[in-house]
Length: 591
Image (cartoon, rainbow, N blue to C red):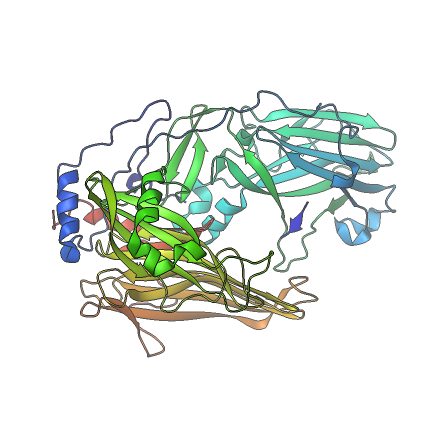
């Protein structure tokens, strides 16, 4: 059941549309939809490098009905919980503070259960405490602290520079304390509780008490996706056995803080948690990078990323898929009769004259296993209208060589590429696209995972134009290396072309097991820089061979340089505009 594991420039970020009707997007007098298709017909100089954030295409968002009431009786009992789904925490090693006051599991221990349905996220915390103290004061003595977090939103915040102050503007975590007398409030915060939080029950039992909660998604206040797919949580129990001593003496945690690099949250996959408030705004694309926020008792999506000026996403891709099925060109490229063919992402030009997509074409697994000689290709494709249907105009491979895997799984211990996504890089030109991916390799005693992008220039014979890694981890039974990179699309060498500046935070860690007990070794952290300069003649990014470039120092300040920060989360790719780019918003000289 368990696996352990932005915004200073809001003026640049645009809202989206209503779910009750399709709202027309604001007109941009500098360019019409027909102009866009004309531009795409002659795409070499389609978009100059001015960091403009375009208006989002407003789309309808369809959600199933949300249950009005919990499916469990929230009565402070574990009777209707599956006992196998409840875990016990009672060891001395879980004492986070006050070890000298703890006298064994009967003094303080607890059990935790978690489950979900489309309307609610349920927790039960069954506390064993031989002396439960309650009073009317605000001084915390005994209680349960429950912290819930959207891990995807948290990862997005961590991927941005500290000086953007995303942590001040995006609320990824809610921490609450529940007291044995039934009172509850925020933990270490004077803020009011979230509206429409859910249902809470606290009940006494012999030798302790039980806290049972049915959270609504509104308890999070901000989430990365609706429906919500993953949550992170942590439970701590506070105990004070001496009535004449103010405050808590002992804190026991399911994931105690040891002052190292271990994660302190447990991850739980929910069943697509749905909103109880109205969804007032729709995102500019499916799984867009941003956050859903509660505003005036309605959910509104605030995008963090650049919104494409030339393309809108196609959520209903049936016409696209039909054109692919009818295309002899794709059948020849892919031999689709013997392949697993999947449409990963699809876009349509705002004028309606083009459709582009990312197609996965791979060998099928045989009896649940991928044969060793399996091959998979990833194609960027473009379609144009043709007598009422769509005709395949162009297809290019996203990688220089086929992937040695099946469409849905790895071949043996070979690397496995998955979680693909597609994003138009209008800030360079209409021919440039980013393909996001995750690469994993798992074998006995080894676990590797990388996320990154491949950049395509679809107007060139060799489409591969560059690549960048955003996160990388390699774990063995006794060591782990972790790299978190910030990748900037900016003018490194001060010419008119955008280059890639990559700042890597590298940690070398010592572990007690595979991804267990890992601590960064002394002198095990370093900052590395990598530069790729854009070559306009070849239409690709080329690695700068010297060790350092003055335009990409290790302390590169994104807030003072024009350009974009690459964002990669939940298997999606996007680009965050620099706050200083606002001065260029009105200057899109090609139009």
